Image 1 (cartoon, one colour):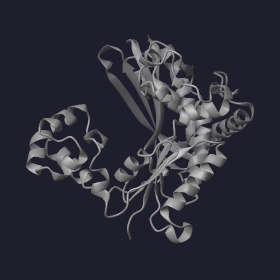
Image 2 (image 1 turned 90 degrees about the vertical axis):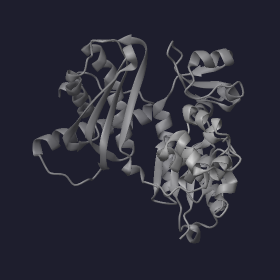
Image 3 (image 1 turned 45 degrees about the vertical axis):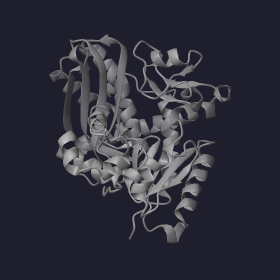
Image 4 (image 1 turned 120 degrees about the horizontal axis):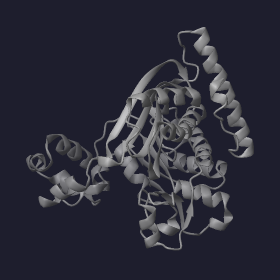
Length: 389
């Protein structure tokens, strides 16, 4: 059976959510991100992109390009809520949904035509349902025989577009695109490829493989040669197969000391735990990340937990334990927490009555907090007094 893969990408997602919720921001140049010395653009509205502002750009540079841009701090809770709606819509059409982020996912639609109709009709239905159920957020969908082509296609007619790359026309559909559009081709490798006269994906498809190997090595040469011909055999992996859920924070000014690091890691633990509960999954491992300012040295530590968890106390306590083996007295620019080894919410587990009861109590407490926050708008969070219970 011929594969049918969708890649859905929301249009300027964070900025679009802010414009949806704040009418005064509509049709205005919006930057979602930090405004401090080390602030980074998390999302840019289409109105500000025309000035050259892009995601991951330092906010200071973005403001030089567009001084009248409006800086809006991120509202992760709102974005997560919208993301849950988006993913739920896609799961109505296929169980094989692979989220890449809050606003982007692959969907394996192979064999669904008899159920839902022609691919372009299905894509339009998904877009329409997302638009209606999220209160007006638009998306773009790429439709193709594999993941690489679907991802390229979703970007061809943004915003609010649908692009089909049909079976049998894979290579010709992407031949004119620049080599940087290929996964694995960065600044260094693109320079090496241009030195041997290769500028487009079509050039790579027609290249002598021996020249490719000589330029970038056998592994990358084989990879890009197959992609240039529209070949990509990777499967769509459902969201439960995601290896981890994490959150991190880069500071405007360096921090140091155990108490300060623990203070900063607490909200990251809460974000990760909320992400687990929103996806109705649990984890069995915790990882902590600390990046030093000097030399950008990254320190990571991880540990397995006896029972699956979805509460922030378990994550925070594990992070504090792991931080005992990390240099927290040096100047630190970033900390992060990650939950890994994900399982279904009702995953069968070995019963330890004492530890299971404690984790169920913490989970129940935080599920209740989720419900309150959803109703009141993220106003309730754990206090340090609760953590001793």
